[in-house]
Image (cartoon, rainbow, N blue to C red; front, side):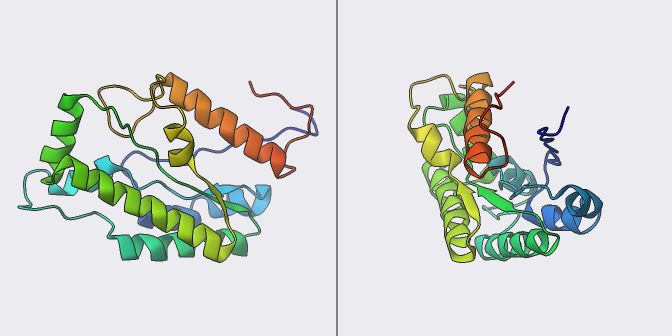
Amino acid sequence: MGPDALEVLNAGVPGYNSHHGILLLRSKLYAFVRRLGLELRALREPVDAQARRAFFTERGYTPTVPIDRYERNLRRIVELGRGMGAGVWLLTAPRNPHASPEARETQARRNKLDFDELMRIHDEYNEVVRRVGAELGARVVDMAAVYRQYEGEPVFLPTDVVHPAQGGQNLEAELLFRALRSEGLLPDRARPR
């Protein structure tokens, strides 16, 4: 590892949302953040997490975390992280503009909402991330905007709406690497692996 080593801790849990992120930060992640001064990334509210609750029991669309609560959760994550001495970064969530018809239909059916309306809501959550970051002075890594620059490239799984293909994962890694370097958290001689 060495003196210039940077360790990344991915504490993401499939199906977790921003409320779960607060609970993790207060409990299991607290010791790591205090000891390591980690950079925290706000959780992305995945379309799938919103869909799980509405599968077959609800008659209409009900988000797992309504947008006003999501905003409060993001603010709390920034507050908690900073209180622990960590830098907090917020990331927007990209979406596949060219999802297959099957993926579009599945997401619309699971959410009991027209696909285009569902994507409009997804974009509203990203706007909350941008606004909270600007208001609180937290760095926003706008993955959604970056992914739009790569339309036509194989950055998404064609059968999925929000999950990147290997090309998208590489894009995210490179973007975060450059952001870490620009913040002075990586030496200029460091190279991505």
